[in-house]
Amino acid sequence: MTLTYVITGASRGLGLEFVRQISSQGHTVYALARNPEASKGLQSLIDGKNVFAVKLDANSEKSIKEAVDEININVPGGIDILINNAGIGCDASVNVENATKQEYMRIFETNVCGVSDITQAFLPLLRKRDTKKILNISSVLGSISATETANPASVKPPYCVSKAALNMLTKMFANHLADEKFIVYASHPGWVKTDMGGDSAPVEQTDSIAGMLKVLDSVTSKDNGEYYNYTGEKFTW
Ligand code: NDP
Image 1: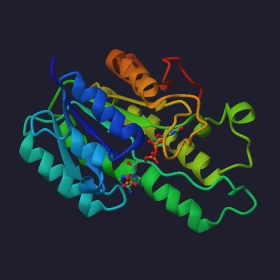
Image 2: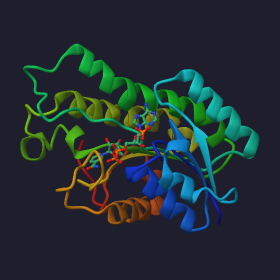
Image 3: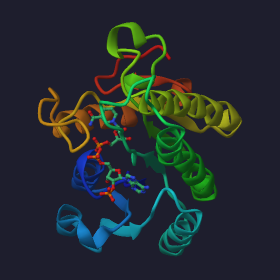
Image 4: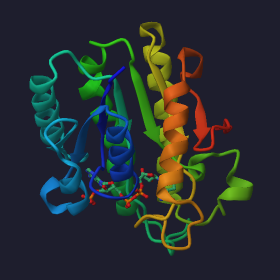
């Protein structure tokens, strides 16, 4: 069955690889990016058949509304899957002693408020179809239970705290939408070679996305409100 996906942060990194792999499976992809024209990778995938680029800045409610309106005109029958992938990190030198309020607010605006605004805005389009899947790209750095081993507590707190908040937001949308048979869950993509992950990351983009898509294909309503590694294992929050 051919599905319609909406993916945020599709200009580069994991978002772009999502677009590449999903479109190669014959599905329709609305690739959302702040500046689609500036992404050579995205431009090379746009074909006017399966892949369409739409402007969206996760920090702008106006931009989100315009993107939803544009997609609604193109696919009045609705969308199947929303992947909230867009996210920002902070410098590794930021720790619990020097992190500023401004830095917390900056990271929260995109990683938490952006996901909330985008999810709310796309709900009417998701409600038109039966698939009703929402995948939030989180991180193991947002797992409170993994903090001792995976997340040195003093490093990058605004990012870690934002992903912990995103995990809670995922759970709250999952609970809120459970009766409507939505499947809302969070995924850790692995530590992946991207602009954010850096060159020394052990996981290739192709493997991270292939793993997350395998999980996305297989989730059912019993996975609503879950938290998965890209390899398919469940994480504890
Ligand atoms: P990149 O930095 O490579 O890409 C980030 C993407 O998010 C870009 O497309 C960027 O667009 C987009 N973006 C950032 N801010 C906004 C905004 N306000 N509006 C719209 N788009 C925005 O990161 P990754 O691909 O590595 O990360 C993707 C997701 O995976 C993030 O949520 C990240 O937190 C998460 N993650 C990544 C890990 C890794 O190891 N790489 C590990 C754990 C989680 P633009 O080109 O316009 O800047």
